[in-house]
Amino acid sequence: MDDTQRRVDAIRKDRSELENHIIDEYSAGKITRREFVRRGTVVGMSIPLVSFLAAACGGGGGGETTGGGGTTPTATGEVQAGGNIRVALIQPTTEPNPLLVQDEGGAGLLGSTGEFLSFSNDKLELEPRIAESWEPNDDGTVWTFKIRQGVQFHSGGTLVANDVKATFDKLINPDGGSANAQSALGGVLSPGGIEAPDESTVVFNLDAANGNFPTLVSSANYNAIIIPADLDPADWGKTFEGTGPFKLEAGSFKPKVGAKFVRNDAYWGDKPNPDSMELKFYDEEGPMILALQGDEVDFVEHFSVSGGKALLNDPNVNVIAVKASTHRQIHMRTDMEPFTDKRVRQAIALSIDRQALVDGLWEGQADIGNDSPFAPLYPSTDTSVAQREQDIEQAKQLLADAGKSSFSVDLSTWNGFEIPDLAQLVKQYAAEIGVTINLKITDAGTYYGDGVFGKSTWLDSVMGITDYGHRPVPNVFLTAPLSGDPKVGVWNSAHFKNDQYDSLVKQYVAALDIDSQKGVAKQIEELLLDETPIIFPYFYYFLSAAKKNLLNTVSAATGQFDLSKAGFTT
Image 1 (cartoon, rainbow, N blue to C red):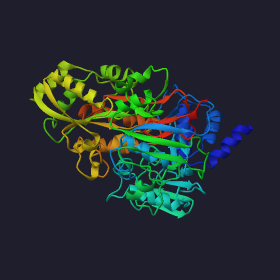
Image 2: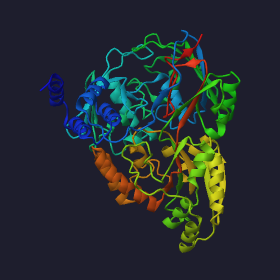
Image 3: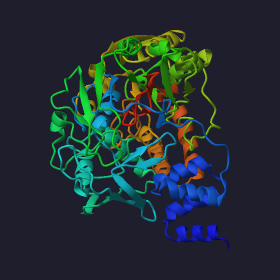
Image 4: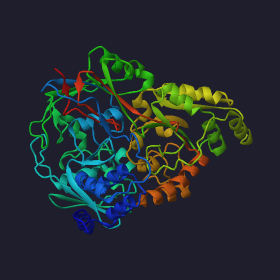
């Protein structure tokens, strides 16, 4: 036995059953090296450790996946120290409150000063932040996180484990917690399940086994910035209290206008390069594009192809394209006419030319969807399931069989990115099969309202188009918009209820290996193609843009960005 094998054996003696299972899968060639590294970091192995095991254990079946979401940098290089970076951000639809934020603009605002237990990078690996490490028990029902010591809040207080516990207690509180956070943690983590036995340890006792739990409490859950235990989230917008590399310049936040953040010299990690970062809010993406080209801003956090085509070939701009699970959902109320009959829902789905949407709206910067949350980038997606394609004649026949050869229905959505264009195209496709769609396009605030805790056009509409941000694992997409359990399906705008579906999702969440996940995924994909409560037309690449002389920026497909290492060339 050589030294490398002895070291591997010694390591495996100290790893959990779940960790050793992942190592076995990789050694047997069932998962790729990239997937091994990703899953290893998710269950708590450090990147250096999992990289050593990847080299030492061989294995690695199939081809390496490409893209993958998370974060990716623009051009890198030497930059000047200091400076002010101006950022164009879509107007947040809620007040700055970690419990209420449920949109891309708000996510960018939270991430400007707040930090998470970990951060999902461009390879879907988890990089430690507030948590230094984490590990599960043998069956993945209990996860223990070690909290970094010596981290200070911007106000000067020291972060301890109880701050982490209190943050998540508030997020999952059924009476006034976070709708977005509960979309990830509903049915996973219940009130009373979190312990902080000492200042450096937090223990999460889950409702059931969950191999992806660390991802659900990472930056992928953008509400989960850690705030002081005694801070009321409703007051967070006064100070933007956090532990990040930037802090709010006092008095600079102005609703509908923007905010300015300055370097946090007491930051626990590498000190940020820029002196400051200035956020400017825009109601629509068009003005953001013009602002970048007109030298009013240096960085656009997100744009669509339809609204920002001018940037794609602009020699003065670096475009950041991140392959992601970001998508639009076209929901149809399964409990209301005309969509109570699944044949009507299938007909609408069959009327749509998905390839034309990808080519026309995204110029190829997207993957075709197949009416389930399983994006092509997920390793567990079963790509053997037949792709739904446009079939006008079959759609007409289904409507005739359902006794609804022609009808009229309202489709509600909001005026952002390519969404109005998508709505118009859906209207045109539906007309080809005899269906009249009346468009009700409003601002984002009207469409989303207060989400699950109040009235919203989104959750009440008979038919609507909703935008969903990237998630590095499909768990949230499988539960929040599709679960029949009201505690879990907090975004179930289709009002879909199917016991078989809910049972399959529970099996998928509990599965610990790719083969088992893929086997359940196939059943879920086929069931959703049959029921069609939601149309998933495409999964598009997340696009950001920076001026050519701004280097070392990082964009996240969840709507966050990191400019702590960014700067301008000389």
